[in-house]
Amino acid sequence: MDPFDGPGSARHEEQEEAGCAESRSRWARFSSWLECACVVTFDLELGQAIELVYPQDVKLTEKEKTSICYLSFPDSYSGCLGDTQFSFRFRQSVGRRTSRLRDDLYNRDAPVTLQRETAHFFGYVYFRQVKDVSVKRGYFQKSLVLVSRLPYTHLFHSLMQTIAPEFFEKHEPCLEAVCNEIDQWPSPVPGQTLNLPVMGVILQVRIPSKFDKPGGSPVRQTAKENLLLAPTLLPTIHELDLFKCFQSVLIHLQMLWELALLGEPLVIMAPSPTISSETVLAIISSISPLKFCCDFRPYFTIHDSEFREYTTRTQAPPSVVLGVTNPFFIKTFQSWPHIVRLGEVKMAGDLPKQVKVKKLSKLKTLDTKPGIYTAYKTFLHKDKILIKRLLKGIQRKRPSEVQSAILRRHLLELTQSFIIPLERYMASLMPLQRSVTPWKTPPQIRPFSQDEFLSTLDHAGPQLTSLLRGDWIGLYRKFFRSPNFDGWYRHRHREMTQKLESLHLEVICDADLLGWTKDKSEVEVVDLILKLREKLIKARRQQLQLRDGVMDKLDSFITSIISSLPADLQSVLGTGASP
Image (cartoon, rainbow, N blue to C red):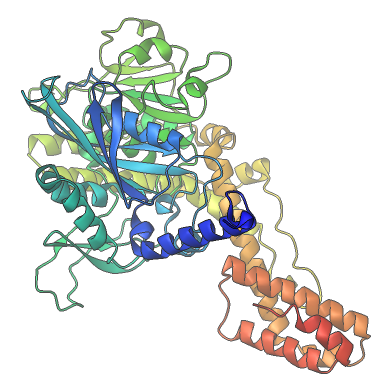
């Protein structure tokens, strides 16, 4: 045996790296949608255990496997018989490698709310529990789980409804066939409509783009491909039935929107993982197109690796939205400021019974009644017209999807009314285009002044687009202290900085660079070449949006300038050519 081939040797690591690269390229299309598919079963000796992972060469850490195991089963309090679908989200292990280029390409054009996660995975679960006398416990219990970085809740739950019933009949060969079919799918590209064949069905989906008009019309069927089967059209890949999620808290919608906007610590206690996960996802989506920048866990258990971190009483509760089903959490989360306790939806005549706001001091017993336990007072008044319209819709048997569309439109307009003044002020911090010149570093973006922004609200505030009255200034002041403001500001500042870089490169491209070099020393010319190269490398890495031909023109300028220099300098500069 060659001693240089042992574990830990450079050659061994190279071989392992090559093997991983080959594996990644083998499943490249599959991994643009999913990390893996898992089967989790209940073992009498081990408890929840992973029975199968596909593709088989996917590397999950022990911590990730444990998270998937515990989050894939409803806890015993839920009493879920039959088939149950829900979703969860968990933190990836430190040090895991991801496909940076693929993520950057997709995230560049995807809406911020649908970008690929870089530090978390989603799990989309189809759990089956049925009586089975042949099993010691008397029940067959198994979950099929799709693990992905994409927040495509509706698509993956629809996919599960197609493949899971068949999987429970045919087991591993069925899962292998499905994974191979997914590996034939085109990668998700924002703005494109795709046909995704699986198990004799074609799912037709449109991948949203950041260039879409917010609240635009739903997907229409396209007939670009010559398909043997008529595709099943999914009108959305991510949207939930908002009305179903919020039907027992409609009169408190304004409060839930504000709590999400401000990144307040919030616990949703629900009777099942389905209601828990859907409610959490509905609340964080209520501030769309603003990205929810805090942590959120659609389904959270006492076995979660962050359980201690999130339940410690030695510090203030973190900015996180947790969905739970175990009544034990009532005692654990007594120090949290906002707790929504949901029950099964009850009707009061034709209308769903609305939960009441209650004092936190009443949250003591395990049989706590449904309600919103908080001392929070909303900054803005309720939209009574919206509530009346929705309640009248229930009485008139208006379809749930129409009620959801009304809700979604209202929340979108509310969020836009809040964000538009911020966007307008942020745009005013951008230097004028004429101040960008080829021979100077691009000017800086002016710093964000909260007081200056608030002074603009009298003439350019939310009242221009929203009829809601209340303390908008107080809401902005509190928003400035939230992770959502920090995330929004960093994202916009990065976009504006990249815009300045693009403008600077375009101005340099239009300048007479050759003329400038004629009376300059070799040191100054070399310095220009090195700086230009650095800017081009950065532009390629950040995939800056540039006018056609800019990069090529600057590359050819660098080449021609180098060729005019002495041979010794040419050989030195030639080794660091632009990629």
